[in-house]
Length: 396
Image 1: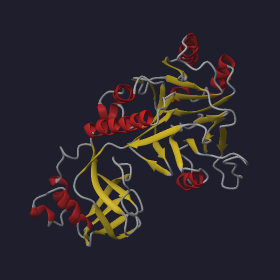
Image 2 (image 1 turned 90 degrees about the vertical axis):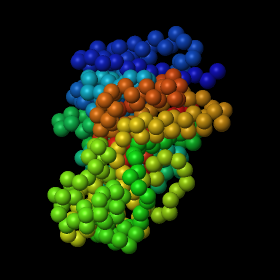
Image 3 (image 1 turned 90 degrees about the horizontal axis):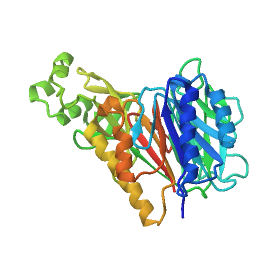
Image 4 (image 1 turned 180 degrees about the vertical axis):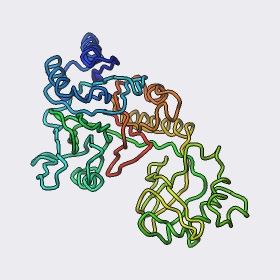
């Protein structure tokens, strides 16, 4: 019989009490034959309330479990199977049991002159769990390099809380900057999906003229004209050069969760969902020159959709992700042993009104599997940094 990973979670103002309760959950599962009795890699996520206690937490975890290798992160909040703790002082942990020599712990400071060691010589990295500090000066470039050092290009994880003066992530020791995580060999079965939950306002466009973060033309037409057409504003407003008039005419109910731009390079990839697009904020318009400004630096030829966030769309896309993973596992005759969930801090209660919505949806649609995760400043999937998204990863 295939067993699932042991895990635990708890909330308490005192980190020792919370960690003790979480460890108690994991230890009690030793009484059940359905849980894995052994462990060699631990994963722990804690809220920012415990950012100063990471070294003591690592020591306690090793002492109480006998597991030496630990990776983890400090998030805005944590979640576990069926529950999201939001901004409460909380911790969640998982004890995995992986084949011998099938994973490697790594940590990288952010200094450019430090020699990199990912993956270690002789280790075949298939994919990697990444926890990164938000102050990393070249994170996007480094993620692209790390992805190229794996067989699949699959990175998954999140950007941590990064509270000044506190620890932000760990890889067998506490870290205040850079990035860390665990690389996995092909012998570790891992599947991962990204969920964004966006509603597209209209059809896709192609950038025909741009400079830095300014998009001048889409499909050969002034970019602002295309945006206003997509929003179906009256002709008089679409022709206006008055920025205040344009802003007053925007459909506030339709855009109550913001106006964004989905960007993707090259030809459209096959597949369902919104994962092909990298969503960024639309940060300004120039009514006189008919230009839109975005929080990115796109290139001519990139594909663009204007979109907004939507709680219902986010629910449906998360259900899609769970369904795809469940069907893939069933078709291959596998079993889920544990799951990790890295979700944007702008989601949770901020998007759904209730921090339990996402973990509950996963539990309902993926099954009652051990799950832990944290609320991130940005989500990592393959070689990209996403925002307002969620990355669901399963061990099989």
